[in-house]
Image (tube, rainbow, N blue to C red; front, side, top):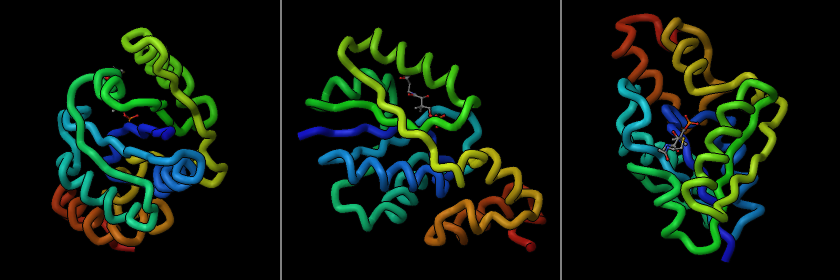
Length: 168
Ligand code: PNS
């Protein structure tokens, strides 16, 4: 059985992430979406909240599971037989960091490959950070975030910014 591990912060999951989950679920027997417990010192959502949101938005994909992990991704991957890491790659901006992470992971766990899916053209500009900034400043994020988690994201942004989120 070929398993894809799709790791990330997902703070919060965006339409771009969901597009990668959906495409990976068609290519692999199983997809494990892994959200890290400690990648950002001041996340908008806790790792369990991020995992719950990922479960909600990926519920329609029967071969997708969501897990929280801490520690090295290469160690986690070593415990999964016949797996590869899958990441989305946006034009230019992601290349250097993703290339470095792929090489570190294969140095730590020889034979561990990373496959990149090119981000769909309509999501090239999208990131969780952009969603948070636009949302916090009152911009419309409804095209960027899955409908199922929209209210939760807007509520949290409102709590953090104390004002503007979701006004438009
Ligand atoms: O959403 P992101 O920022 O691309 O996710 C980055 C993530 C969580 C995939 C990366 O930071 C990671 O793999 N963290 C686990 C710790 C680890 O293995 N570090 C060494 C490789 S950089």
